[in-house]
Image 1 (cartoon, rainbow, N blue to C red):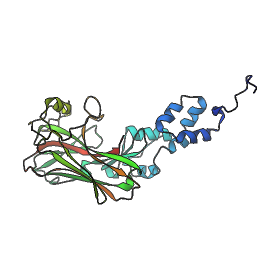
Image 2 (image 1 turned 135 degrees about the vertical axis):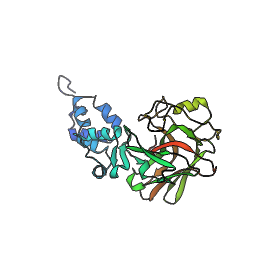
Image 3 (image 1 turned 30 degrees about the vertical axis):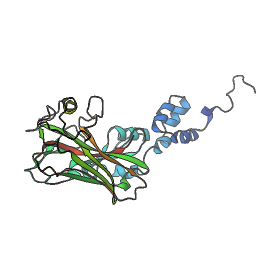
Image 4 (image 1 turned 90 degrees about the horizontal axis):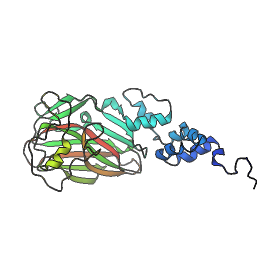
Amino acid sequence: MESGGATAVGDINQLPEDCLSHVISLTSSRDACASSAVSTAFRSAADSDDTWQRFLPPDYLYMLSRAVAPVEYTSKKELFFRLCDHPVLIDGGKLSFGLDRWSGKKSFMVSARALWIVWGSDERYWSWMPVPDSRFSEAIGLIDVCWLEIRGKISTKMLSPQTAYTVYLIFKLADTARGLGTPPQETAITVGEEAVSRKSVCLQHDDRGRRRLLRGQFRMWGGWGVGAGMGMANEVDEDAALPQKWESEGERDDGWMEIEMGGFYNSNGEDGDVEMSFMEVKGGHWKRGLILHGIEIRPKH
């Protein structure tokens, strides 16, 4: 074979851009970003709309049509990362829609306003409050109840098919929080008619090291002092799950806390609704200080 200065036979950079784009689209968003550093030809193909169109969910235009405000973007790649980093509010601001950065699978958060909360409309027991700089503009604070029951649901048709999901309660605790340690709270996930997950969880714990996980400097609102402390300590079931870290500092990127409620597998989106519940109704004692932002459903890693 002659070498000389001619381009080597089989040089992948000589493939048509649409061919390179198709090959890259069969990988992942992470691989697409990495491949853009290979060569100028790869960069052009990796950044093309044809490539990133395939990383977006098939119904992304329909989802964007439900957005509260128009979503502006100049390329499909920009849109992809816009949805990863800044989920958009849909359905009148009661839900948020976003994408998982590595898989491109859809994720959702159901706002507190869209949840069913026992006595949630009674101002003697629950109070709505503004939460600036958060995903939703408001949260609901628990004043005092002896029956804590929160339920939410989402259609499996909205979720990505062939995907395992994990469900999280998104919350904060006020200085006045008490009664959220023992007995532990119970969570349940039902898909269609099938109960797929049940857990015991705990929002408060008598372990000072773990309690520090919930501390932080948050915005004060009215009588709610969020993040300065945990209030009354309680003895709890040691097997009950504790609030999970989003980052090593113990908080999510958005300053809220989360605790896993369970998980499920969405096969083909034909199983009806996913119903999620968080409750403590057995103890008969009073609970206060929970600040609820919503329930998040995101792909399991």
